[in-house]
Amino acid sequence: MLKIGLTGGIGVGKTTVAKIFESFGIPVFYSDTESKALMFDPQIKTHVIELFGEESYDSNQLNKKHIADQLFGDSKKRNSLEAILHPRVREEFQKWASKQKTPYVINESALIFEKNLASYFDKIILVKAPLDLRINRVMERDHSTETEVKARIALQEQTSKNENLSDFIINNDNLANLELICKDIHYKLTK
Image (cartoon, rainbow, N blue to C red; front, side):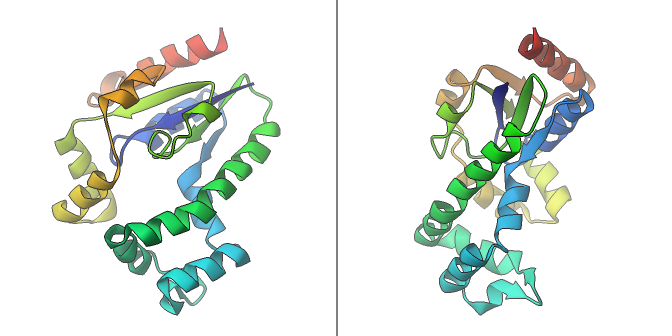
């Protein structure tokens, strides 16, 4: 079974692309969703409280805004959290993938290149979109300001090197042909 990485910066439409592959019967592992679930693992929760304080959890709910505000302003805290969280997410993906019975599985993750994870995958699909479209999508989705979105985008390194390391590139600026592009990639991965 092939392990496919699906990546791209915030607002490019990774989830939309992932849902199309799911409609083809391909299982998708969402790294961000798994990361959020792992924030309630006792060991990780203790680490989060040490890093960000007791207010990181409010009535057994994750205080995302409190944590995000600190993450975006402090690379040491961000690196510390990622050091404990990312290996666990990879471990959960491996366990999950071993239970699947399809020709390939997809791991949707924004930081495959930034965290040097490309070698964990047989193929990489990179999703791209114009910056103004990405900003508008995230502002609408998260009810964020343009400044907040630009700050989040700046944290995710997007370079032409990423394109050179990708096996498939989807330019997600025209939703009309997105399913056809995904269908072509699906065909190539199953033949």
